[in-house]
Image (tube, rainbow over all chains, first blue to last red; front, top):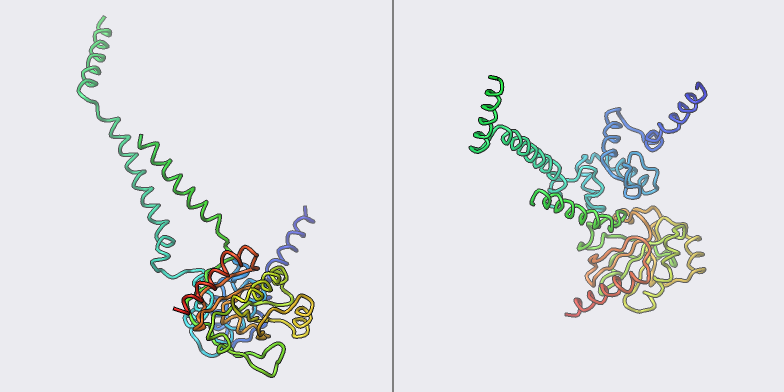
Length: 157
Length: 178
């Protein structure tokens, strides 16, 4: 048991310092700048390993792009300008949060629209069901009354 | 009736979406550079490092730019196709030697053949970034004005050459003439 735990801890140790590995070599004037660098890289997708951000990826290109982002930060560029620089070359795909444009309407608004549609149909279905239970038509009511009458008479004996 | 048809309809629509989605290659990212002038570059040539090559070399006629490296397995895979393209005479094929060592690149060419009209050397990959290169090999087709009109990502197969690359070149040539 303790051995397994130790092993798990050791494996955890190998998994954690990935981000440190990709970013530790960069020098910053302040902790805030380092944090800004980290946050900006986390928002940008590595083109090679598409499920990794530039902050995590070990791909060669990701290293080059980190270097670019770092240099541009040192030149005083804003996050917006740096993102624009990458989007102009690689397209909106580099952004984990794509901009809201007609092309991405479906992406942004699709899920809430489907949720609302689902709610609408669920409510309608539930309402319809209770309504049916409460309403009897004329013929059913008469039949119910007859049954109740029979019952009453039965009790009278 | 509609109670049964509606879910069936939704299912069919989703099935079509998924079927289309599964056919697409997620590693092929549409380049925002298609339709834009080729990004500016000025680089040494591989064979004559003292001479520079820049955008002017790519203007005046339809041309192909093939990004390659000696360390790139896919480049070796497509090299016969690149040679066939160059030999067809459809358009001059320029090479962009990406993040490579000069000796390795020269050895690779002498071993596998050199179909390129000229080769620009992008030692640090900076021009590669400007051109939006993210995975060699990549192939760009430029029109006579030096505007990128088509981009192929990954190794070109003979089918790609026959059904995409050559038709695009032909189309751009007729466009340039008219």
